[in-house]
Image (cartoon, rainbow, N blue to C red):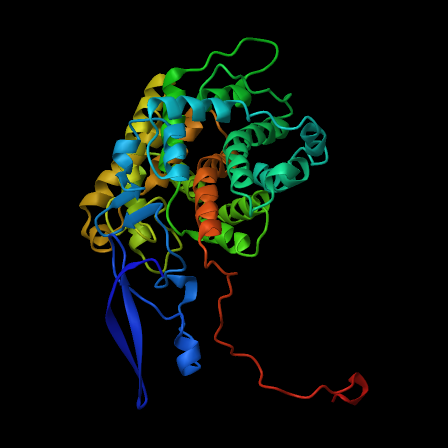
Length: 433
């Protein structure tokens, strides 16, 4: 165990037997009780549905203090990193330190030159129905990369691991743009090496062969910031899925595909779409009081979407940056009078001053404004979670790589509280009453 401060002990009493369990301290955050030998010493497991009180791994990548509303990537506050660009954040998550100017240029060049995908991937896409959900296409196409890039699937080789990491950061946006283009019946647009990461992605999504496409720098900057805000978020469901898949020795492309599949769930990656739908259902500012009343009514099925968070019990630090980004995008696209934004601003104002929501710590989260922002940029709701996956790929691959390099990592194997039948004998079908 690499965690520091193993000087304290926790004592667990079971009937007349006492078990001493070591307590570890991280660089920041709460102490952790090591129960890894509990079963061997007592024959018992702990019970923790959802693993909300269980540390599944050691990590040096992301730290969240939900009570204080803090999010750090490698020790750097998200508010400060948002001043840079996404590829700088990618470098930080992968390598552990911010790049020098020379390192940054080299990293940007390597990512740019990996953005094309094998031409046979275009034929692979033709096997999907035209109305296939882009996330279904993403799960399949990212997993299929392992069939095209055999030279980066040996997880025991550090060089191959890094090549796979670079390829994924570079190629997932290309696949995401292809999934979007396929869904709307337009031809694929190849990457352009002269453009930055976000601008290149916007062009692949929105350019058409019959006319020149000029990237709006405000939208490119906004999308780049959105990618930074979503790059990693500690041991969430999809990241845990990537680590779980990786613990079996699966190739990195398969692991990221597993993460995308988990992200597809509406309780995880689909929250911004749900928040946008809620604002649309409210419709106008004058209907907010009626909506708030319904939310407070326990017999009502109306829920306040885009507020509160599983981890944050304070204002989500990403939400303020997303709010700023939202206003910039709406101004740049001429949608500053968007009725949805007016509803969002007023709803946030009421919720932050209403004791009902304050006492329950229901503060706006990053999803509250991101749906409006992505809609204004021009993306349909079916693409919202795809964009989340594009951003989170670097976090997933960094977490996967960190796990692989841990000398004592082992295959994930949670236990259970069994409540089924006790042992019983099989009876042939003709003798069953």
